Length: 146
Image (cartoon, rainbow, N blue to C red; front, side, top):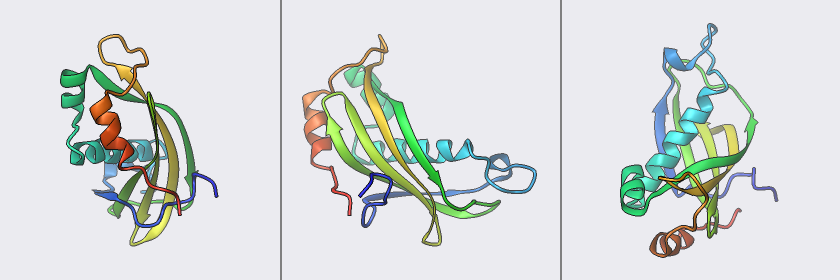
């Protein structure tokens, strides 16, 4: 099974709505806007775990940056659609995470993605190990793809 296939029930799902600013002239979501939807959901997932971006940066000198992403665009989202953007952690390494994400409309899969994020020093923007307490907490959240 590839990482692109969705895991069972998503542990975390973030609602979003499609606005004019997200679409092209035909009212279809512009492909790059999906990246923003995915990013917001990952940010809110981390916040829900008690590790907001400012806390990571100020408390641990840590930021996560996208290193690689694989996306499968399956169906288009359109103006005013209510979407659910899911996040599931499938791999936690010392200096990186792999997450699988999906975007759905009324349960219908529109997009799925595998995202590798690197742990970086916020002050030096160089790779660093994830601090042990955070690493331990994240390791407990790893899901096995269905």
